[in-house]
Amino acid sequence: MRMPTPRDSARIAVLAGGIGGARFLRGLVAAAPDSQITVIGNTGDDIWIHGLRVCPDLDTVMYTLGGGISQERGWGREDETFAVRQELAAYGMEPTWFGLGDRDIATHLVRTQLLNAGYPLSAVTEALCTRWQPGVRLLPMSDERAETHVVIDEADGTQRAIHFQEWWVRHQARIPARSFALVGVEDAKPGPGVIEAIEGADIVVLPPSNPVVSIGTILQVPGIREALARTPAPVVGVSPIIGGRPVRGMADACLTAIGVETSAAAVAAHYGARAGDPPGLLDGWLVDDADAESVPGIEGLGIVCEARPLLMSGPEPTREIAAAALALAARLRP
Ligand code: GDP
Ligand code: CA
Image (tube, rainbow, N blue to C red; front, top):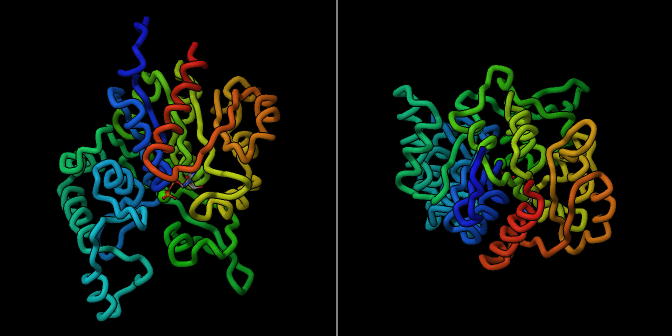
């Protein structure tokens, strides 16, 4: 039997993508400074660029919580320069659409060397975090390579799959996506500690990350969705959609591709109620005040729902959002 845990030292597991997840996490660390937070990070966006292994979402979380993020861009390093990028372009090296900053490249050099020496991504991530001290345990969803690809139509009527980054960064998600495929996932296992973190958590949080290519990707790793269904902890989510639009980025293009409307209620229904039949993922869901009229419908699905401001416009509003998620979870704890 598990002893009741005072809220301050609660074990919190969070499934996170990049910018939305990282900003929320900064608020969560502020709201529950003494808690043990384990972040299960999306590695479906990972890509080899110029011989370097790049893990954009893990790095966004690590830099954001470690104080090294570019505040202005929301990704990459602060005080960044792009000399290497310019030199590569002068050689005509492709791809030119994925810009690696000079400071950022050091991270990818360290990661690539350690991977080449035989260390798994989880150990490499831990080593990188020794420098950044993010204040959370950052776990890749898997040590195996599983990368998101996007199926698009060609002009000649055939279809082709391109790497997620090519679709997202190069094409800005403007080419309609037919579907997403997480290439390699059937052979992927959850990373070390991932299942234990979910099953042993007091609270599980789905932050306002992309429901398709961040959280949806993590959930495809065999065993992770099942662990969420099984955990005795309440699972609460924060809507990334406010007033029918993603706050930043192109999550609407991803939702459309999987046939889900871009609304806070449709994302809640897509995740589903853990109490539902068939069982889904959510016990609780926070929507923005702009979506308050959708609260009764979401509650009708069997998901406890509250409306409050969800714009992460600065440290204090973000801390308050995280505190509201924890308070909702506390209400739901069995
Ligand atoms: P990415 O991997 O960098 O795309 O980041 P995530 O998947 O973690 O988060 C992207 C999502 O964050 C987008 O769908 C946005 O709608 C959402 N988002 C960004 N800023 C905010 C905000 O201030 N409030 C809320 N509720 N969602 C946000
Ligand atoms: Ca991402």
